[in-house]
Amino acid sequence: MQPRKFHFFPAAALSVLMALLLYGLPVMAQSWPARPITIVVPFTPGTGVDAIARGMAQRLSERLGVSLVVDNRAGASGNIGHELVARSAPDGYTLLVTAATFVNNAAVNRNLRYDPLRQFAPIIMLASGAQTLVVGPGSSARNVKELVSHARSQPGKLFYGTPGNGTPHHLAMELFKQESGVELVHVPYKGFGGAVSDLIGGRLEAMVMPSSAALPYVQNNQLRVLAVVAAERSAVFPNAPTLAEEGYPKVVASNWYALLAPAGTPAELLSRLNSHANAILADAAMRESLTKQGFVAAGGTPERLASLMKADMERWTRVAAAANIKAD
Image (cartoon, rainbow, N blue to C red; front, side, top):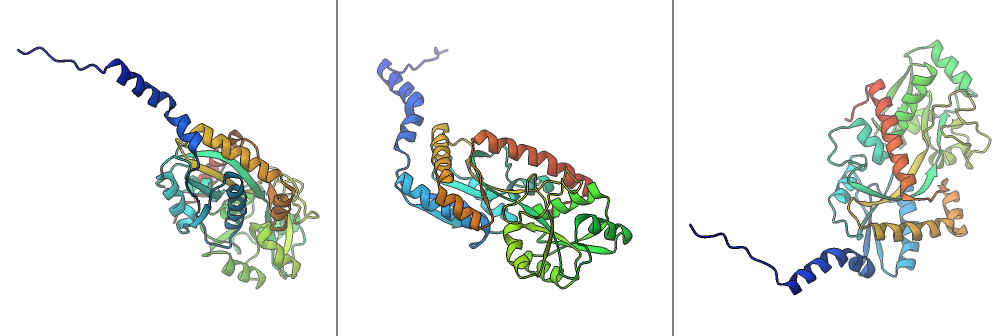
């Protein structure tokens, strides 16, 4: 029986190997970015997410000294773009700008091919935007109390619309239903267009939609805001009460927009991106630009975003289970 042969690295080679293991990531981080960075937006051009991403990309490009390319990968409620980033190399060259839908999708669909809490590294919360509870111009409801009273008088006979099953707007209305005890029937549409048209035309009783999207309709007297579905009043509709003020403190469903990277991205790169993004969001011109679009600049640490994502996942999973909401 031949004795087993053991192969030893020469001392010099072993030292080189250890150096690569210990210092490889810092060296990569120091040389980053050496080429253009792609920001994936999982929605179509012209959406709020897209506008925020493009504003951030322009300013990050100036600070980093490389091009940032916005790549719109729309489809499947954002899941196509989310999956793409989840599978991307964690090298700082593929980033994601998305909205609260990112977490909501996972709350209603346990068969997603990505895990928002495990396959992504939070960088920063970029902005927030209040959701609003609106009714059509012909509605008899002038406030939340009247809407609830009207709905309770006709249980199961009035309808509310959303841009799709399992969307943030759907979950927000179901939470409102659970807290108020009303029975409104859900009508899912493929986007906001048809839902808003039917709300204006009186075929729907109410719906929840972003303040930024509701603003032009309210200005044209086509829709009426009853309340904002947020913890604080909205700068877009400062005279509209929150649902908490109307007696429903648990009904909070502000939309948020965030910058993330694939899990495993070096901590130093995440820290640099967070620092640059915070500086951009603190700039008066950026804050003004976001305000004009109906958003509020956010900022903060990656931990703040991670905490928000975890809390939303837990809350909307409970709401979806109680309402038996499942992905189409």
